[in-house]
Amino acid sequence: MARKKYVICGVSTRVNGMFIKPMLETFQAHCEVVGLLDADPSRFANCFKKFPVLNGLPVYMPDQFEQMIRETMPDAVIVAGADHTHADYIVKALEHNLDVISEKPMVTTGADCKRVLDAQNNSKGTLYVAFNYRYAPVHTRIKELILEGRIGRVTSVDLNWYLDTYHGASYFKRWNRKRSQSGGLSVHKSTHHIDLVNWWIDQKPVEAFAYGALNYFGPEGELNPLKEDGRYCGTCRVKQDCSYFMRWSTRSKETMPDDDHLTGIEVRPSAYTGYRADACIFDSEIDIEDTYSAVVKYDKGAMMSYSVNFSLPYEGYRLAINGTKGRIETKEVLSKRVSQQVTEQTIDYFPLFGGKETIHVVPRPGGHGGGDPLLLEDLFLGADPRRAYSILAGAEAGACSVLTGEAIWKSVQSNQPIRIHDLLVSANANMAQ
Image 1 (tube, rainbow, N blue to C red):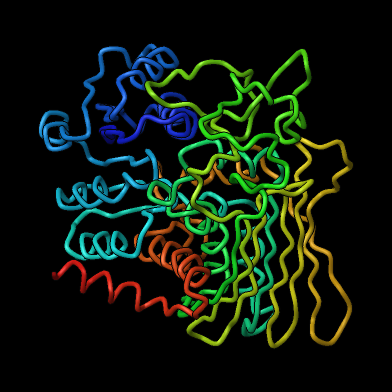
Image 2: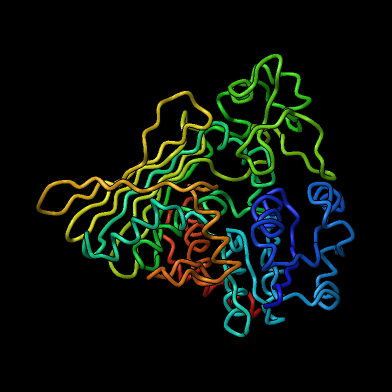
């Protein structure tokens, strides 16, 4: 069988590690990278340095998408640049009847959700959204418990997500800090969490009400050592007075998050043109929230209480799913960056009448709780035929998560509940004008 040909839009650090490396190694017999597209030529150079075998590959600028498709004749397009760039590439690829793999979030606005959904409905190609957290063994076991009817009909979900001062602050150093580029963190980050719940309970969100605030970052942050815009960690003269910076650095070794924000690198000039990942977390350019508390209503009667906080001492989440026959509980605490004992993550099942059962899940290696390798197998080898339920996310799931995230921040701004469907209706009206 011939290898499937892929072009990549957005040659990010994420795409290098998540997609290109496995495609050249694990899935080399099934995949061939035939073209790269990005606005920054230095990203091509960085990619070729990491993967010399790709040297000489055709490269294209954003306005050369049609030329790239014509010259490389791909079977599929991988979209993994900054969030706000996704929609155009997804829609164009679907118009060419090509398959598409998009990093989450699929897009950043309800208007772009509408464009993508329309394009998918009219295309012979298929869009897949890379919701890797679905594939973590703990998360698939929760899905299976619900499908087995262990808790009956789902009635409510409580999900509290915590990001530590390293990971959480990283979003405010990079392009994510601008709503125009990320949709805000209720879209960029919360789509991970919202999609998990949507998939677990197999219900569609219909309305959201939320409160949110910028409590830690921005110029009014209580730990801001100096109200002055335009600073960067690498050159800041007051960084040793910044608690966020010094939490992960010493006077002899300075570290900061890299583009993928999960591992530390020494502070150094950016490898990319005009971009630095060490912008000050207290800059007035920041126009997004760092704290949310939301309630989401679903079409089959369930309700979700959701919160996320981007500046806490440790990272993880607490989850409870309630149903007419019982309750599921689990919690995850990540210890990669803190000195604390963390036990194996388990699932506690409480039947409505009876004793608690603790379920131990066999862990798997790989990113996102072992989810990344399994997601890639489904994307590049096809869905696992042994799995009895659907797990790959498509355009509708991608849209549901983005629309809910947008409803959350719009509710914060308006102090009103937001109907999810209304975001698509208004998008349709705006497109018709």
